[in-house]
Length: 148
Ligand code: FE
Image (cartoon, rainbow, N blue to C red):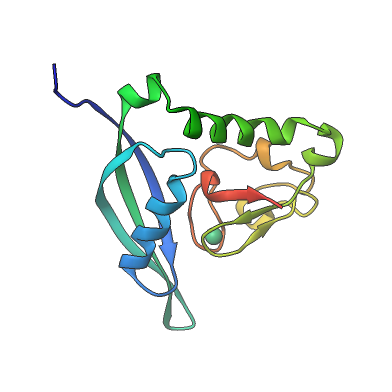
């Protein structure tokens, strides 16, 4: 059987410069954990306005990835994913309150401050943020954040 079966994930990307760049940020940002992504479809386009000007473009994409490759991961990509997950477990005390940076817009989530505007109390670790929490600046999801 040569038929291809794809799994689909939905993700958001944003950019200060344009839709094209927002798509690239989302697709290229996903490469770190979905190197077997094969196609995308833009399902939503919107923007954020600040002071009467377009501050950010945001796109929501459906990304199709090859589920066969996921089951039999190529050693390189599989390793990258596990290394990423292993990181925060070492030295847990310190890392629980680590800051995280939005890879799209540079916003920094500081657990000591939380995100009170969006109902996140100070002292909330990044991992304890609700899964539907998004970047207060550009609206991308938690997957677009990296620990700093
Ligand atoms: Fe952001």
